[in-house]
Length: 349
Image 1 (tube, rainbow, N blue to C red):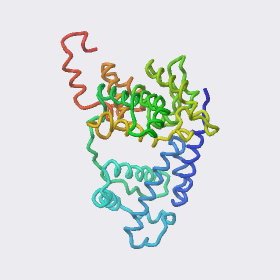
Image 2: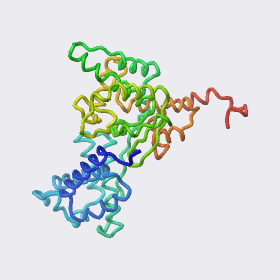
Image 3: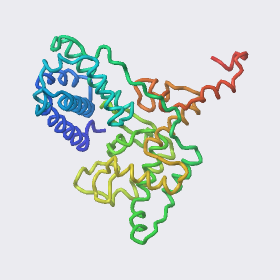
């Protein structure tokens, strides 16, 4: 199998260009911080850090009369050295109460600021760390897992495989994409891969002999994800009977392609899933591609008897805390415990 693809190279190139543009809006003294981060962060993550820092600098310009008409790139180390934890607390308060941002968003932005200030202080760019004393933003954990039931998942797949359109034109379109869409939904529901990982797949990443696909995880690392016969049948039908309709010289190795004969985008897959979910399971509002990932993760957890480490490994999580927080609903462990007899040796191991 190939170690790279045109799509992955183009995606990385776009992020590099975005980061390059963002860096032109940051002070020169922040450059070493991003150089150090490159060792263990994806370029997309660095873009997020840069955007958060730019917004913070824009706030400082707006809030401080002495910085009026100053460009974010012209903010100096002396300007940051004059800040106290109260200044950053005020920034957090504005984001929460004026900008009405979600606590999770505010916490993430503060985290970006905190990591830079820690770096600048440790490397003696700043005389003190203004983030010391800044209280964290509490985020209420949402433990209602947005997942489908087995019945809802089956209805969704059935809707994709047997859909009918309201117009002749649309019917002809769906006839050409029916197997592709069924393969996508089946793959998402039965492997739990991310939609970004799905659109990055090349046809050479599919190994029907070993029943596995090669995906590139969020951290940029390659990983093997295994699938069952149901996924194999859906993928084989699409590749053998329909994929040739979308072929072109542009990125010819892309597994899932659009009617425009280009690699499908994350957005196009999201819209397709939303369209079918709205029709098939209207009572389950807000169904997304990530809902399908959570469905697989939570059902796998239950089927494995609560083996959270295995689920984390399959989903590509570095930390089992992530799996626990977003894929295991409250009450699941209590339900398992209720079925056990702790006084029997074979129940608890």
